[in-house]
Amino acid sequence: MRFLLTLSLFLAASFNVFSQSKTIKLVIDPGHGGSDPGHVSNYSGHLSEKELNLIISKKVGAYIEDHLQNIEIVYTREDDSYPTLDERVDLANTENADYFISIHCNANAAHGVCGSECHVHSKTSTKAVKLANEIQKQFTEKAGRKSRGVKDTEDRTYSLQVLKYTEMTSVLIECGFMTNENEGKYLNSEDGQEDISMSIYNAFRSFVITQHPDIAFVKEKPESTENLASTTGGEGYTIQIMSSKTPLETSKDEFKQLGIPVSRNKLNTTSSYKYQYTVGTYGSKDEALLDLEKIQTNGFKDAFILKTGK
Figure: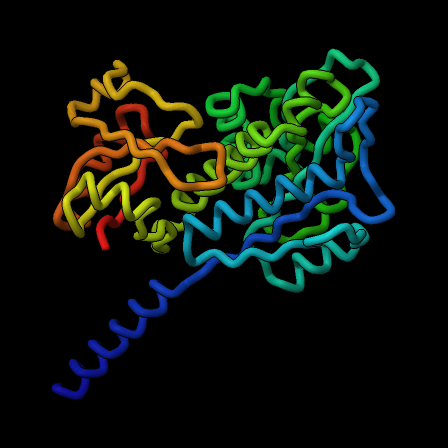
């Protein structure tokens, strides 16, 4: 009997360790590259599509690596090379990836056309559609972009190889139209690239947290140890509710509705999002979790817990 109890405890502990160490794999595919520039802008000083795709892809990957854990990122290219479509598909399938995101920029003969799109192979692929919708939502709500919706093979009247033959949840993103003068300027600006990549990151983060509730994705680390330590008075936890490029007044109505004082911290970062907004000081993560749910249901669904102090 004692042996069976010991064995049961061992198996339970082993299972717990396994579940905590579980990871997912994401393939990020910067479209085009090398001898294939993709779309080329007519506007002076603007980058080609292949260059924009690589910049945005690397920013998305950097956000994920900086803020999340238990996610392995594989790129189909990390430089100005050209993997064929077959090679991109084979890489994703050989890696047994869980998710595949292909990043592109659009063009149209009518220069007034603008906005972002997400593409899936079929709208029967419920996970792909969910991820695509979340990306479009972030583009419109956080980046202020016009949404042209989620499209599949029937909408396009043709299939996309990297969506049709990849064996995992796959989405292709069109970040905007290079042929629209204003949107082209936006895509070529640091702020625009930050907005777009942050929106993709936020969408992917929300999506995977919902899809894999058994995996701890969010890293417990301070975004700015110096600033947070000074506001919380030592080790503990706080909740980040948002970040911004320019300073916002903490007396804003949307902050007041939380019923908890909001602190604004200036970050020492190369990102254009230089201001961080946090609420609460907590002695334990469990204590912070009690407020996190209330904060997320009060309009800050991307809020997350940060560990503070030294």
